[in-house]
Length: 107
Image 1: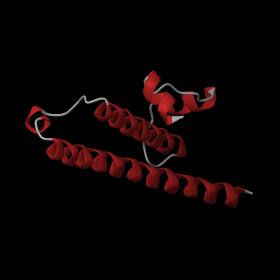
Image 2 (image 1 turned 30 degrees about the vertical axis):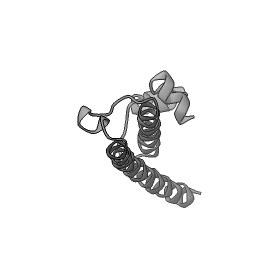
Image 3 (image 1 turned 120 degrees about the horizontal axis):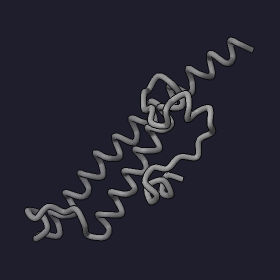
Image 4 (image 1 turned 45 degrees about the horizontal axis):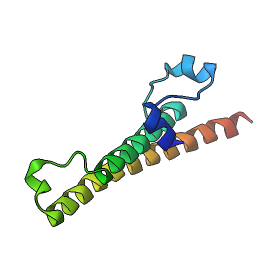
């Protein structure tokens, strides 16, 4: 799903309620809709960046001349991007757990 979103530019398959309640772009960590969307966007950005590097695009000229420097630079860039994905995943998990607690208390 994240690959499809990256390719079509972060389109959304949300229902009318979610789109109306969160404007389709909510990325706050306090609501499950926003955290989920933020995580999906982070994954899509990571995959897009990975694919760009695999195609040989996006390398700075300073490291392009050296294969080992290029590998190191790409590795560091993807590590930073993966950390952002992990942070968004934790936020999504926290929001889901908080929502579960509220729904459980209501039942």
